[in-house]
Figure 1 (cartoon, one colour):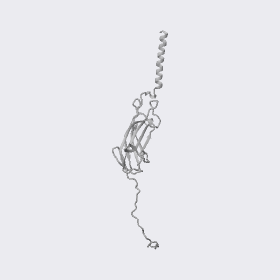
Figure 2 (cartoon, one colour):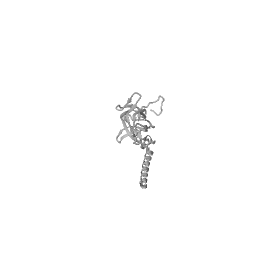
Figure 3 (tube, helix red, strand yellow):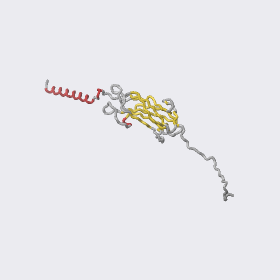
Figure 4 (cartoon, helix red, strand yellow):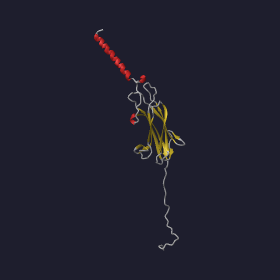
Length: 214
């Protein structure tokens, strides 16, 4: 073999070895190179009272102003790796209490009531499966008003490794996976009414003589 051919062969072998080393250095643990699929869903949204639970399709759980409104969201974590194997992931579940207005759907807080209108919870790294999230709202002082519950499930975005979730907690660190709504879940009943009136005005004369009176 000529010296030039030998140099060319060595160069080709070196290039192949370099490509192999590059591939092995960038391959994630376990050999999974396909992207992670972040998935999940909301199964139901329930509002509980002392005597009853209103699931989606049921309505108008009566709540007096200032009393607790317990919202229970049933949801599923379904994130999979590149081989479609379920893996542990981080999620955010958001619940909102509000109703439609002329200006669109607004939360109780946006409508000026001094109660939470939006609550959220962020999970740690959890395996795929079924879960529930509970949120405690407070009934606004708005008698005879019907309230909806809106929920949304988010999954953490994939970090730079391509196989793990980001660790941030901001909304921008998550992507929306599913929504659920319970329209007409709560009816706020009449609040305390401070009232009174004057039924009449009378003047009485004491038995003691008043010289100014004729």
